[in-house]
Image 1 (tube, rainbow, N blue to C red):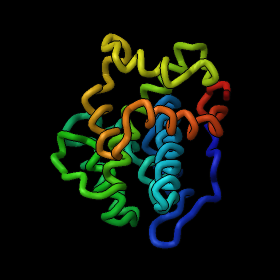
Image 2: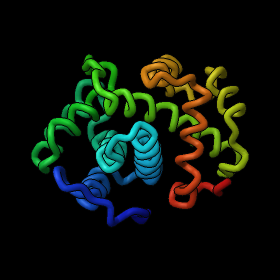
Image 3: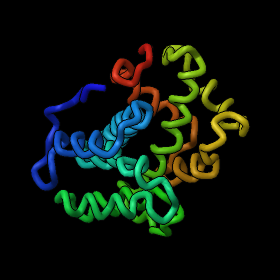
Image 4: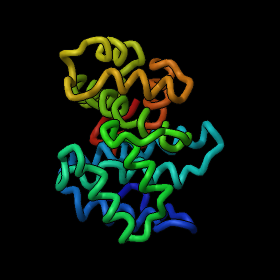
Length: 198
């Protein structure tokens, strides 16, 4: 999978290129790389809506699960990754936001950045899962079709519905409103995600 956005950068933390290189060093699964790109896009959109730094939000989205393939266990995922990120020059702002998306870490989500990554992760995964069962065709995915799957707990069982609702509410959004934001964010990168765009 090629990096669809190799030039994005920021001045006070390592560049997006460095983040992409780190992601691909630790994450070999095309599905996990696609998830990282999807969450990055959603995070950037959430930042834009809130007048926040889209590069910062995007980096957190891109790297939020970069260590998952090697450290999937609760207590290791994001903790080991945090050590790696610190060595690579990422600031505590990025590391703490990433670690906060794992509920078991017990971190308070006291910033919009932390609330955004928590909200974006699970629901973005569910939206993409709906697209996959609809023939990888994002144009077949609607807010209504996603909400049906949110309520169907037998679908994508690994996605916590509690986290979906709590994440949206943390952003002062209803779940359907957040789904609409996610669909809007994913459409421009449907190709790199392996999905047909709307």
